[in-house]
Structures are given as structure tokens and as C-alpha cells.
Image (cartoon, rainbow, N blue to C red; front, side, top):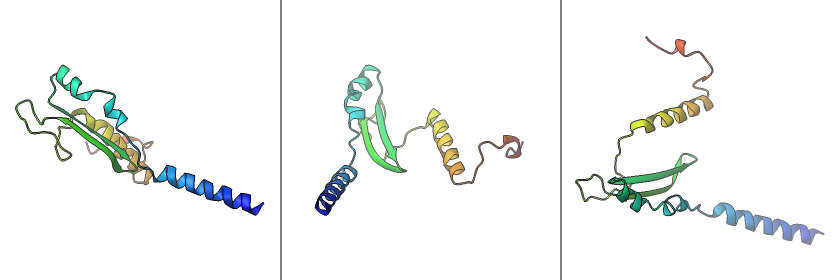
Length: 115
């Protein structure tokens, strides 16, 4: 009986370390979309995708050039205008602050506003 238990435990340990030790592959996010073709079709110079997991970058891929007038390729250090992306980022930061107990999203906003 102990042999079966130890064998089962060993197999479970090896399986879980194999599953959790693997790096996730997020390339399916960009490979199936044919982004280079989409950039050409819609006359866009470039595009960048970043996936975060547990506050860390787990996938990053860039396509195209920095501007329509440039041949310089986009890389992981290229800065983009945030436009409307700032709204979901602000919402995420508010949820993080609430999670840490620094903000109460259910409290009336009037107390926080200065004007």
C-alpha cells in the first residue's frame, strides 16, 4: 500500500512540476490574426501586443514600423500614445488600490473631489 502511495505521489509531483514549470506560449494571440496583413490592409504603420500575468510581462511582440514616414521597426522600447487605453489602466489601478485597502470604490466620490 505504501508503494502505491509513494508512486502516486511521485507521479503527481512530476506532473505538476512539468505543468507549472512550463512557460506559457501566447504566440497564438498574434499568429492567427495575420497582423502584418491587417496593418497593410488598414494602412497602419505598427502594432504592439503585451500580455501581463501577475504584474509581469509574459508575452510581447511588435509589428511594423514606428511611423508611416519611417523605416525604423517597432521594438519593446517604442513609446506609443495611450489614447483611450488610459481608462482601463486607470480602472485596473483603482482595483489594485482597493485590494490593498487604500481606496473604497463604494464610498461617495464627493469626499474625494476638491472642486
